Length: 275
Image (tube, rainbow, N blue to C red):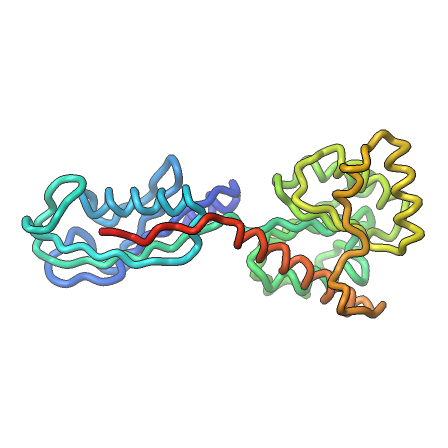
């Protein structure tokens, strides 16, 4: 479990290998686990051919972006075909391979009425959720206690002066949502995210008039049109309209979930296991 936590913190994919069942004699009992990364292995499911094939298959899944769990079976006898030497304990083993993908990262700049409602929704999903606000009272533990049962990894960033400094600390590929209480802060964040260049998407909340002013300012600050076009505004699904904070939050969350789904679907299909 420490290895799984470490991979998640480092935003590296891996595969969790579990001995699913054992019949007869085998080197490890059901429930034994191993974690495989592209360049590292933690734990063991029994060594020998069994483990080597599991590592090879896990790394195939990592290389091809496989996301679906799969089961591979081994007959541990001297008559079975082997890729990495004979292993004749006499039993049969099933291994479960579960990919551990890098989960999406989302940064909410501005945890006001809409930001907090959005955080409450996203916290129910397996994401890394970064909350940023220049107003200390918005990030008080009592106010964020609604996220205490979060599935997401929640990271709170206290930045009372320049919230745009957080951008360099965010993981590459983060989805940045700009929705602060201050249009000047929003403008600075749009400029900083474009200059950083590592965000997967940049979403800005606001009216068409606000965006027209921002677009002119970003152009005046030297950003080319193709860079400015990376900012999506308004954000949310167009079919869901309304100005209530909870409605806006649901719309933005649905838009994000569509993006997450598209990202998963662009991963190459993996080959069926052969063991």
